[in-house]
Amino acid sequence: MNANFTPPPFTAELAAAGVPAKFHEWLGHLGVGALVVKMGIVFGEMAPERMTATMPVEGNTQLVGLLHGGAHLVLADTLGSFASALHAGPTRRPVGIEIGATHHRGIKAGLVTGTATALHLGRTLATHEVVMTDAEGRLLSTARITNMILDA
Image (tube, rainbow, N blue to C red):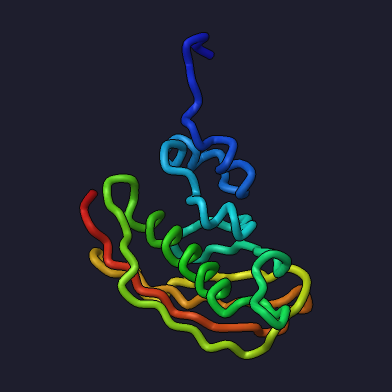
């Protein structure tokens, strides 16, 4: 390794968020975003067709102690946007244009798993369905996010 080599500034952040090393060169100057870090989101699978991540309930609750509905949307937006970015490639950028969710069940503790599945991967639009479940696999919420893909 070159003695003058300096790793990109967000390499440690990417590793802590579970982003595979094969994406570090591409994302190392971008990171995962401050909100992803604050919410405690950690990625699992990462591909345009299917992406997973977990998020703790603790620290992301609303007034009565349930996971905040907005936290569901943050997880869905994160998964759909990252999956769209992988589909778009390093020379193009996704921009969210629509997101909506249905909340099916509340959760007060534990870990939420989000799974984004591509519904459409086109040249200018990418749409993902994101299903959030608890540790027992029970459905918590379902979201749909559409990203427009723009030239960088």
